[in-house]
Image (cartoon, rainbow, N blue to C red; front, side):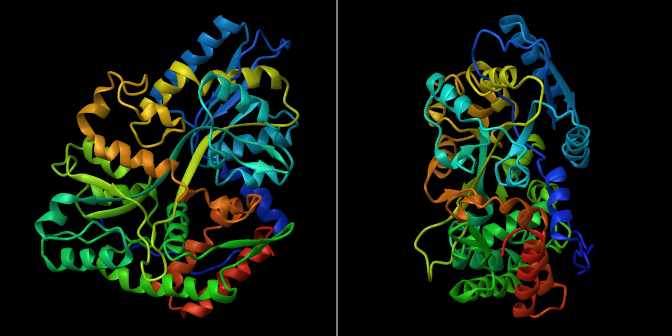
Amino acid sequence: MENHGKRHGGRPSTSRRAFLATSAAASLTAGVAGCMGGSGSGSSEPVTYISNNNSPQFQEMLTGFADQFEEERGIEVDIEFTEIGGDYGQRVSQLIQAGNPPDIINAEQFRIGAYATQDILRPVDDIIEAVEEEEEEVQDKFGFVYEGANRLVPAVSSVTNNWYRTDVYDELGLDAPTTWEREREAAQAIMEADNDLYGLGYTTSATVYGSYHAWCRLWGNGAQVATRDGDTVEVALDSGANRDRVREVLERAQQMVEYSPTATNWDWGEIYESYAGGTTATAVYSGGRPKTQSIGQDREWADTTKRVNNSYNSSNQNSSLGNSAATGYALLQGSDNPEGAKEFVQYMVTGDRLVEYARALRFHNIPIYESWYEPGSAYREGWDYLNENFEEETIQSEREALFSDNTQPFTAETEPANPYASPAFTSFQLGQMFYDVTEGGLGIDEAIDQAATTLRENTGME
């Protein structure tokens, strides 16, 4: 699937305050569900939950969970189903501004800071402690701490995967694309093989996936978007030696687009469809959709699709660094039934409910409990889809990557976590920077300076 549309280089001129407010309203657009055990919330008000998944399958499943919860706990749960895109963020923002916030919202780890910085999220440490008593310890990297308290109850996560077609790689005698050097060698060889395949999909777009792809590519060279000086989070793109590493990434981007379809407006759907549709042989993705879509479309290369970690520049690193992005639930300040909401969140992120939910995600977003990946666990036992389509090697490779210290959320560039990673991500300035140097006619240093300036003006970073 080749796209020729271009995003032209106009830049936002909104104020920092306006940008942050808009970002908070629109940024929390994917996640999971949750609950905390007890004997009742003590409130006659129903728990209100705004879901960002309105597919018939998920409506039926989540409504069933709510009905079970009410039968067991005597607490009613009122779920409003909205679309994962703009409708969701707009609805949450509308309810907050009307003084009627929902108890529970879906939340993505790398975007939750846009709400946290407005002080509208309740602490959820007590829920996490209860979850750990029922299941197992949750790694700190899957949460989000702001002002000393967790604001996210994680349930599942995804990890940076570089999916590739081993049938093509083996036929051409190519090594797996684990490093920049191997990735480029493979991409060039695949293009020269004249087999109607591009070597990879290399996105240079100001979109959600464009932001993700750009940040992962920066990490592949040890480059950072942000650093911290005490309480101040600073933009790092144009600073010192880090600027040199950013420059190297953009120089590499100018080379790699030669082996990719024109991808200047690609989002998530375009990259996995380019792979599943047989246009590209390699795809960097957060989660498993290049493989699961190939399975769903009954492609002959579905069985030969394997994963490796985010490719890295072996001239300055000896291992990969990739993103792990947890999704789950957040509780809003000022809602009517926070205690009931805590119970429902714990209920949803433990036991059979999370097993069912995670299975519905088709091994795209996967559970944050490491023991669940053992053969014979409740998560895996009898799950024909997984057993029939995924080799144990791929399952355990995904598990190893997810729980490795070499995969972290984008917020983890600073300690404490960077709450401004959210507006930095949703501003699309990183993807715009890649576009500017490959299609937009800007020099690399000019593109770095413009991206850094825009992030400073609009995100809360200095």
